[in-house]
Length: 126
Image 1 (cartoon, rainbow, N blue to C red):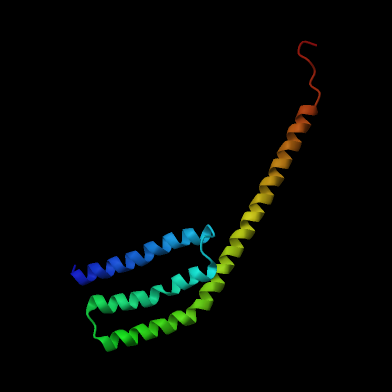
Image 2: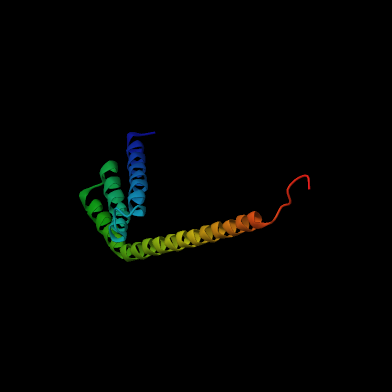
């Protein structure tokens, strides 16, 4: 493995690892959907620029690649925002349904326990 391949692997690993950290902060509500979407699409220009620097491309090639990746990131930003909002909405619906189901189960268990306790059992030996 060449040093360029190792550096590219480190770059990609770093971009993936920071996404995992960022997702945890987004799910806990510490960062907004828009901020998270911006961080997601910003990975593309960072990857393009890192590739150019690591592989030693000339400045013209780097500028063209960077401009193309910035344009693509700008196009993908609204898609990323809507996707993150949809995921958050679906998770909230699932959690609300799970809470309702757990409450219904607890109520049914309490009813069953009360019904079993109210059944008359004759004393032993009679």
